[in-house]
Image (cartoon, rainbow, N blue to C red; front, side, top):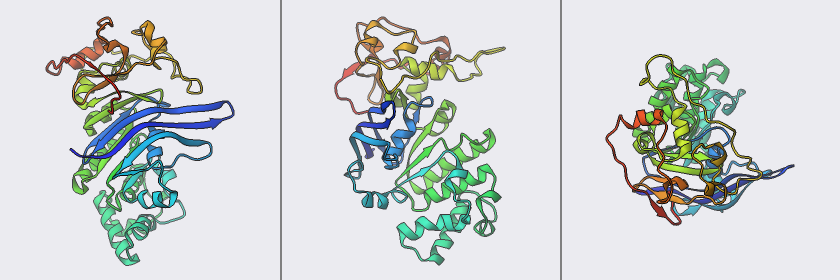
Length: 356
């Protein structure tokens, strides 16, 4: 597959009264054409900041892109003038935000809000834009689209509003669609419908998706590849099968362990990750997860780990994969999931300057 986006050594910080918060610290990843990449991690790990940096939506001040590249179709988005970025934002790269009510203008009809990017980016006439807006409302599964076109956001349910937001994001057939926890505010039934809708629309318009979530259950349903974020860094990346059935980073084990599973009989206690995320005003010297990990080695508190390559698609930032490190078994709840898949263990290899 050819890459549509490549992010290299991205750093994003925020100036605060207490000092500089290093929210994103050297993030590397790529997105292939037509694929869905899920970025997962608990709140504060840097997921949303990373993707808002791609859209150049970091409020400045206090936030700023401190360094790195975001290469899209040969252009570095980090260095583009705002006027050029406005031509890309909403047209080539669109975003679905977490709360549809705050994403929609309560004083404008739904139809006008869908027409807006069509008129601005596609140079459509108002009549053509109206026809296309009604088509989009139908495409995202809203009944009576001609009637809905004239209504206001408060006349829609939460799930219906999220469908409208998706229609706006898809209006210009974007090459990249960023979905920032688009189903978090919805109940599980509507959540399943929205996820199914996104998969169906991806096939129809051939877009690439970056899906941000803290819910690994959602990841299993939508993603091709997964990037696990912690403390402003990507600590593990791989295919869905590699992340679920052959995870190597203790933080990934913790995320999987916090999920309910049907494999356990009787009452089941969910496993919580102890401690709290690191203070990114003063990031830790070594492995950011060391203080919360029962598997931490002495070197984890002294030196940041490099990336180790497990397979062509699987990279892990952990000293546990060093040849001299003690062999550590993942927790039993993780091994339960591993047993569901054939063994595909591969010896990790240190990679210098890896681009995940």
